Amino acid sequence: MRLRLLSLSALALTLSLALPARADIYTYTDANGVVHYSNTPPRQARGVRHIRTRTETPRARQGGGSLGPRDRSPDRYTRYDPFIREAAALYRLPESFVRAVIRVESDYNPQVVSHAGACGLMQLMPATAARMGVRDPFDPRQNILGGTRYLRILANQFNGDLVLTIAAYNAGEGAVLRYRGIPPYEETQRYVRRVLRHYYSFLEQE
Image 1 (tube, helix red, strand yellow):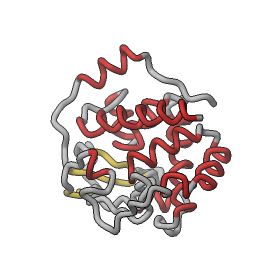
Image 2: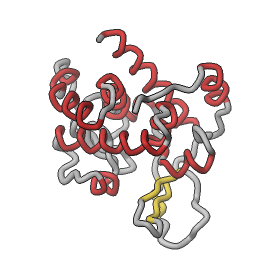
Image 3: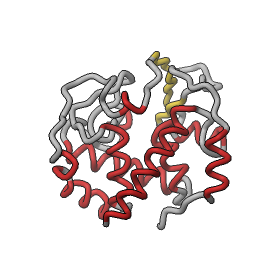
């Protein structure tokens, strides 16, 4: 399935409707065993777990405001190429797309942990890592395979829409479904723009 983009005009309009970002995350498991994450309280009250976090800036998402040792070596940007190629081929996603998500999520730091508890190169939440079969989220290969598998699931859910896939990876599929598009979260809208920018840049280098 080919990933598709929203029209630039529609994307610009959607991203311009920014509302104040929420710093809290709510998570719950539905009756089908699917784990949902949202920046707004879900309607159901049962089994909802509230995670209080700081609002992450782009700098924080790249490790500046996160926990764990930072990898500053220049070769980190190519060190995981074999795993990226493997994951992209296995889950039929563009390598440039996977690279862009890793760049924004962790800046290629395999040991980074966000304040919300997301781990590794593709910043997998513990529940997501478990769903994707990742036993060690700090193992680069496992993390990339798990994160790419999750991207594939989201791409399937949103009919190959690249923009909605990116938004759901950041805010959760529940939020994208609830708002029927990119959620009105400043952090998520900024995240979508940054991933797309890196994606197009990596495409030009291929």
